[in-house]
Length: 209
Image (cartoon, rainbow, N blue to C red):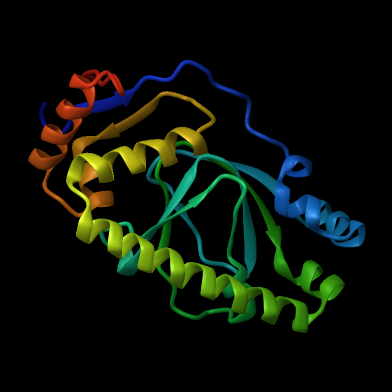
């Protein structure tokens, strides 16, 4: 396959993106905080490759997957999957330098201002949440580094396919070999060989275009 060829991981089902009331983090918040989020937010559909702008607010990921890219580069260091929230640390420290967040596949988010939520919950709550979130992110990055060091490209590609499949609610995935190469930090030819191995084992189907 050529670099511009789309790799389509075919899935059997596709569900309509969730509403904000279905989001697990939203459901865990007090009713007053939920009301403030609904009053200040709106649902936004992003296409694969779209950048989530840095602003002093929160992105509730309803469906899809966003990736974090340091300095806006090609290497994706972590994924923000459906059911997660992006922007907690930005809300705590507006204007600080952050990795660029981009939609890896078609993604639906609920964008809401952070200020009303902070007003309802308080700065102490947000500070503790961000501290816990930072610990979780560091653990995830350490796990990712260990995976990249010990696993071969087919296993790493399989991991990303599962992430994207679950985040996209089973929708077909339209990604190029270059896209996968950026996520894995490898050359397109390595992705091609790994994809062929997975397909030979009947684990996934890939198609051109």
